[in-house]
Image (cartoon, rainbow, N blue to C red; front, side, top):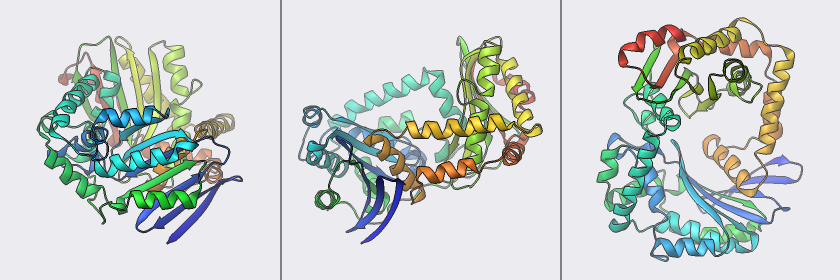
Length: 433
């Protein structure tokens, strides 16, 4: 049994414990009246071959459709609803999660149910066929919603013909063809003890909780499990992806290739992104929305995975001002490269990041998601004080150096949905270099 403990404040201690092959992350919150039980597994769309595209997400849906102990979906939902629980599941590119949150006195119930759906889902063919229709409609929803669709397109542009470039929801042909055998095979390959992190956050007795979960999870498949497909890319010039569609707005993401989530410059990237387009006082919000009146939303964000990453700028803009907006964005990127930011703007960005982090950790599920995903990826915990320290260490010169590293022609990528044809690719290349 190994144990590592990190404090995230003077009153809370987060501990990692490996017991009988199970990985536990315990986040005690003595003042809490509730508890969150979260099971995370390293399995997502970047673990899927082309023939499996969408199975991680589909499998996540199927885990709420019945187990041996609870043979249909109504039994599951009724049990959880009867205690007023909040529950769901989610699929990302590099992980999948299952969770329930309930009042502290219902800890035994949510431990039993979430471990049950994780281990013992039946994947009945009749339920697969029903849910297939739901997922296809979910896919249609994404296809018909440009603000969501554009997120898939930028990954497709950046990581062509590989799992990292596939949409999480998957390929329609694959979704229509998946069978019970496919789900069982995929689950056996990926849902193993070494790839799984069990997170418990809230008011609980650690010794009792570990004992109960260990018993509930005793039949988990053992082993390293399947590994993520490595991401490969090589870019020497700007890239454009145009999705012609008759819309009332043009939606785009402009992305500059960056680095993976382990790079020490990630803190500098966070500050740079905040200055550029996070918050209503950010440069792009002021220039594009307030001054030009050209967009309802515009924001920047960093998207860093274990072996790839980018800084993105996303917006939905007026049809007649799209090119002007791209020129404004390009000008702001050039300013970051060529003109050192002010002390005041640097301080504001740092305080914004630290303030948002503090506000994001208020409930047991906030703590479970934040530290659970952190440990799953980094295999360690970064207390808030440590993150604050890293943010405070970012200086003006490091931001300028990073801007010069990022905003170069050979790193720029633009995905756009709107009233354009593929023939206009050259025009957009000129706007972003």
